[in-house]
Image 1 (cartoon, rainbow, N blue to C red):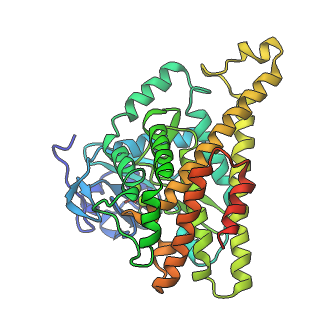
Image 2: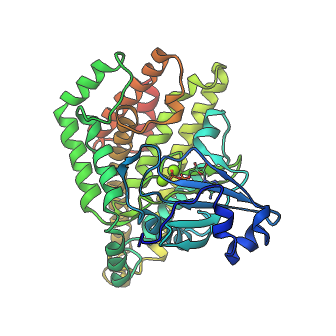
Amino acid sequence: MSNNYKPLSPETLCQRLGELNVMKKAVGANADAWTVREVGDGNLNLVFIVEGDAGSVIVKQALPYVRLVGDSWPLPLKRAFFEYHALTRQEARDPGSVPEVLHFDESQALIVMERLQPHIILRQQTMEGRKVAGLGKTLGLFAARTAFRGSDLSMTAKDKKADVALFADNVELCDITEALVFTDPYYDAEMNRHTTPQLDGIVAELRNDTALKVEVQHMKRAFTSRGETMCHGDLHAGSIMVTDDEARIIDPEFAYYGPFGFDIGMLIGNYLMAYHAMPAHISDAGKCSDFQDWILSVIEETWSVFRQEFLRLWRTERTGILYPKALYEEQGHNFASESAAEQLLAEIFRDLVGFAGIEMHRRILGLAHVAEIDTIEDEDLKARCEAKCLKLGQFLVINRNRLTGMDAVLAAARRAE
Ligand code: ADP
Ligand code: MG
Ligand code: MG
């Protein structure tokens, strides 16, 4: 795959991609007149904005290592292949949710895609205290449609198994999640970092909480062994680009077949961290509490839209091998069908609560942190916010089978004040 692979640079890009018809059409016929800018806010890959007379595109190219760390941390180029295949599936399963793919070159590990404009990363928007109208609806629909339509509830057995096999090769990116999310935060792993000494006590407490660690490993087992649907795999607030009234999803290179509740759980963990970080970003108490209420309403809406859409698809698109209509509706057992759907949704809820809690832990104790919290300059203020998130995460993981609904999660978030 990588025989003639060469990383692009702003200097070489015009010459190397200048003859591509898709580039001529989307950017402009004369490649010499293009301007190229590297985007610096991703962690893993090269991303360029290419602009010309006709418009602009994004060129994303994998490197044989982690961009942020360098060649001491190798990472295979094939992640671009998984990103490309994930984008095409997400587009089919929830049209309009992701950037349009214009070109894919496997040997160069390179994707040319629609540039989202004037979109910015959701984390940035949140830190500026700007709301996004319809955010919960868009993300709830995305999570439900990709979850349902990528599963045995919808796909043919042949397609599903072929797809599971295809994505099963995304070993190295899954390995990052398995280590960085589910393991490292709970012991003294080399790449960890946390605000010290302020958090030392609570970190020791979490690592001594054997019930917590057992529950986290149950969640890790779900991650590694339950190939229920194609997950985005990295659905945090840095993988969502927004305007004041639109949201789109990017960066699915971690895609793999995993549990129904994984993506929405990670997402809700990110919302909850933003909730606790807001007082550091909005000094006016009234405005801050209004924005925090909005974040909680987004959580509520994301989940209620997910539920409604999942139920709608259950009733109208259940064409796969699971819960076949021949066993239920066709024998007049509609109630049993509805009840099976509710049981499945209850299981997804328990999982998402666990994943949300773990995401909050790993973003504060592990390698990759979130900007909403990490940019808080006052270390004591930052540590107080982090401690709330750690406690809330612990509560969610431990109590995930006891919480009755999203109201209970939101109440726990408010109590952590
Ligand atoms: P990485 O895998 O390295 O995290 P991302 O896909 O997240 O790379 O892209 C890094 C950054 O590039 C994003 O945070 C965003 O600012 C920008 N970006 C990526 N894709 C697009 C796009 N389709 N439109 C506009 N900007 C984009
Ligand atoms: Mg990214
Ligand atoms: Mg990425």
